[in-house]
Amino acid sequence: MPKYHALIPAAGSGSRMSGEMPKQYLMLHDRPLLYHAVERLLSHPQIGHVLIVLAPGDQRFTVIDWGPYSQRIAPLYCGGATRAASVFNGLLVASDAIDADDWVMVHDAARPCLAAAALARLVETLQDDETGGLLAMPVVDTLKRADSGERVTETVPRDALWRAQTPQMFRYGVLLEALRNADLRHTTDEAHAVERLGLKPRLVLGDERNLKVTYPEDLRLAELMLESLGKQE
Ligand code: CTP
Ligand code: MG
Image (cartoon, rainbow, N blue to C red; front, side, top):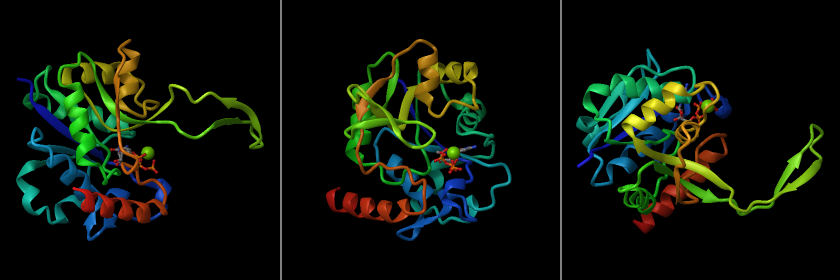
């Protein structure tokens, strides 16, 4: 039976939040974003522990009260220059503990509102899959392409377009090979690297609440999403 490993890249600086504190450490309902991301993953029965990739020299991680999760998290101080580099470094550092056929689930620290049902759907849909896949949402808005003056040049058909979320789940061997061959500066998610191998990751319906906190106004939204999850679960 392949095992499941979760990995959270948490080595970013959160530049679009334009604050001092990297966003993974901003508080949401009295807990850092990173804490919520860990808690959501560990709520799944198949996920025993979470590897957390941190920036070398990170001083904030150890100060957090990890409570019931303290024995189920492993900080790896090997973050890189981009998200993809952080994930790749983490996978390399953890190689002794992971088999090629094991599943690795990569989830953003900046997504604290992952619904249990979406996570369960991802694991269940992919358990016998050859390639793996990701949570994603079908695009519902009409899409416009703009010129440099922000004038519409084209309406882009939205059929078959999806917005990628995380977690993204692939076999360790596949993911490692994909990232080894990828341009880590321009690879914004794991699926992109896997696609470059000629494979077709499976899209699994995500949840609109699984937003990535990116701009300051997203924090309030995330608070509302967490409340909504709490009422539902
Ligand atoms: N991340 C990482 N290493 C990097 C850059 C990003 O581990 N060098 C992580 C972030 O900590 C976050 C996830 O990748 O959990 C998604 O990235 P993003 O939302 O872009 O976060 P930041 O890069 O921190 O934010 P920004 O792009 O606004 O600077
Ligand atoms: Mg970034």
